[in-house]
Length: 124
Image 1 (spheres, rainbow, N blue to C red):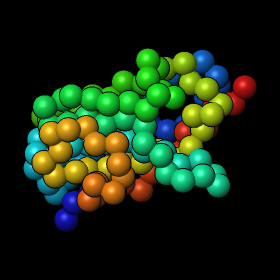
Image 2: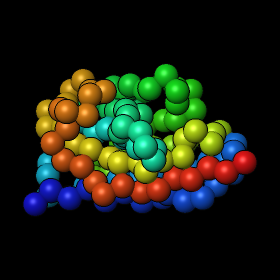
Image 3: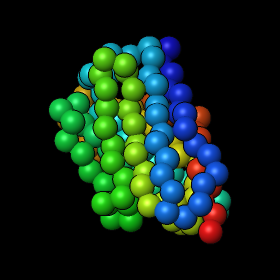
């Protein structure tokens, strides 16, 4: 049974830093592309960042230059380093897994497995 568990959310102020982690189990992690998505109240879930099996990465324009996605295949974990957080980054953040994802896919439809999410709240 595949399980993705996100960690590291919290309440921070604008300009602060957070690092999200997503621990995967029940799958061969190095065969999966991984993505981070987020959903704010009243909005659709949107792409944030993705990393392929070969560690190529892709970012939404809104976070490019502030967020960094990385993976540690020895720990079956994907990370999202979030710097210079803004109020508009407030959302529930989800990680997702895509089998064979060489390309860092931006579309949520290609991801087969999802975590339960972790709340990130940014205040002024």
